[in-house]
Every structure is written in structure tokens, then in C-alpha cells.
Amino acid sequence: MSGYYVQREALYREARTYELFAGNVEQVRADLRAAFNRDRNTLGDDEYGAELAKKLPEMERGIFDALTAYIDELENVALGLNASARNYKTAEPPPAVTRN
Image (cartoon, rainbow, N blue to C red; front, side, top):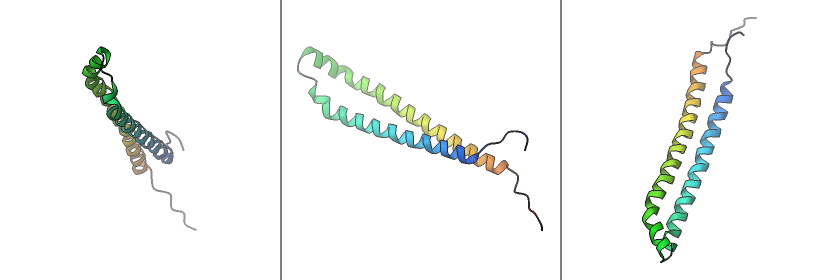
């Protein structure tokens, strides 16, 4: 066989790896959200705590927006790999029929 050859199973396997990784990052995001919610009221009653309390919502938004964008990218890579595997399957010629 000449030309370019792709192992569809490898594409599907890599897609699954990205899907699992996205799920792991989603769990990290949920754990971090829970930690912020749990500890938000423990900033203290001093100037530092008051200043941090003012800035915390924007900091949280930046962190969670970045995590969401990362998860979206991981999921998009998985979708692309799955689509590529399906496209290569469609493009492959059917197996040759042998007659005895």
C-alpha cells in the first residue's frame, strides 16, 4: 500500500484519552469550586481579608473561565479525532472479495 495510512483505532484511542482528561479537569474544576465556596468566608476581618474579598470574584471568574476554555479545547480535540477516524473509515476502499 502506498500513500498515507491511518490506524483508525489509534485515532479513537487518542480521542478517548482526551475525553478522559477533560473529565479529570472537570473534576478538578468542581473540587476547586467547592473549595472556594467552602473557604470564601474565612478570609479574615483585617484589611488584607477585606481587599481579597473585593478581588476574589474577579480572580475566581478568571480561573474558572480558563478551566472551562481548557476543557472545551480538550473536548474539541476529541471530537476532531473521532471525526477524522470516521472520515478515514468512509474513505477506505472496501475489502477485496476473493473467490475460490
